[in-house]
Amino acid sequence: MDSAAASKLFRRLDRELWVVTAGDGVRRGGLLATFVSQASIVPHLPRVLVGLAKRHHTWELVESSGAFGLHLLGEEQLDWAWRFGLSSGRDSDKLSGLATRVGASGAPLLTEAPGWLDCRVEARLDTGDRTVYLAEVVDARAPNPCPILTVKRMLQMAPADRRRILEEQLVRDGAADACAIEEWRRGGR
Ligand SMILES: Cc1cc2nc3c(=O)[nH]c(=O)nc-3n(C[C@H](O)[C@H](O)[C@H](O)COP(=O)(O)O)c2cc1C
Image (cartoon, rainbow, N blue to C red):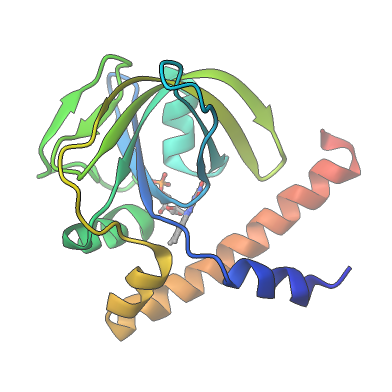
């Protein structure tokens, strides 16, 4: 398998950044994600697919609540990338100080995001490193049309120290994901 070619192909893409939030009534949290896709073309039945690594705090909250919020980021929310993407919600409340409300699904929603989807899990697939959730969108807001923050734009705007931490984390996460995928393929599935 030409893994270098696969990596080269993926590098041509520029994914939008999302913040996935969840809460179980006691705890709340969220993470930065690129594994988010529209999963229905039926306007009155919107659905999404989201992949969350099973070692993350947010995964625990989605598992226990069956719901999550999805938020697009604008360039003004660059600091949310560090807040949600670089630490674990087991150590602090990542939503602290941000404007929130509880959505129809029960998930906490970041009301200052330039767009959000409130989602209820309909099905899940264990893929070893991640759980892939299919969810129905039960509520949505798209208030502010503004340039959406993507991975490439985030990296352009990132101070050098943040960029280094992101790259180090990517290597660590990749190593953990590789172990989980290989174990799953060996028969844990
Ligand atoms: C650019 C970027 C994209 C990411 N995409 C995902 C993703 O799609 N799914 C996921 O589970 N984690 C993803 N992560 C990792 C989590 O955001 C990160 O590990 C986070 O700190 C986990 O927080 P938690 O333990 O509080 O849930 C991504 C991180 C970065 C920097």
